Length: 222
Image 1 (cartoon, rainbow, N blue to C red):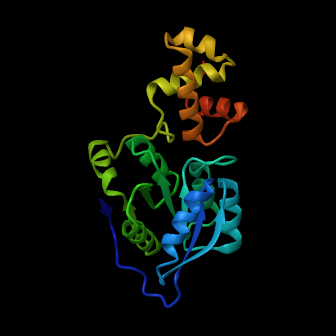
Image 2 (tube, rainbow, N blue to C red):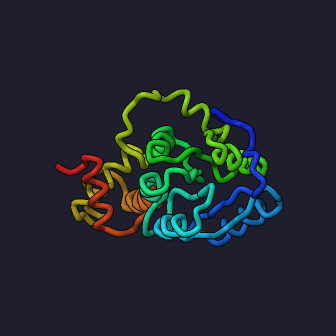
């Protein structure tokens, strides 16, 4: 589903795109797609959110196509930083998550679009063109989640964590090992490990101090 999608920019030069994803194969695949389009130019590649922020300042792209789950600094944090320093750069988020809380959080962070990693090459190109023109673009699969969610609802959790993931995060922030987390929540150690992995993917960090900070921001700690 697209929203407020204007026609492609009528500029003579191609749309300058900066890619940001911590997986080289993903970047290779996206670059191969975009290089086939004369109207688009890939001007650089970042491997984490911090690099994306720094390269945005030096390269000044029209569009930053960025994964939301990355190390050092995740896509949410990078989008918020770029909104403060370079609001003219259109941030287009690429993700595997389609929960409404996650999407709303990304938009609140300053992104102009949100596309899923399984979209077609043409839809990706349309998305880049749309946000570069000042519009918004959301993958068709995200439409039902946005329609079913209250657009005016406050975004308390920009990471899109499930209730169980929030519980696990709270216990991790308290310094609890997996065995104790499992006992407290009445689940298996393997399930705790699975939730920890999902948490790290969603918030984009493996750092214990950063996880504690996020738990504080979400009001999970007493």
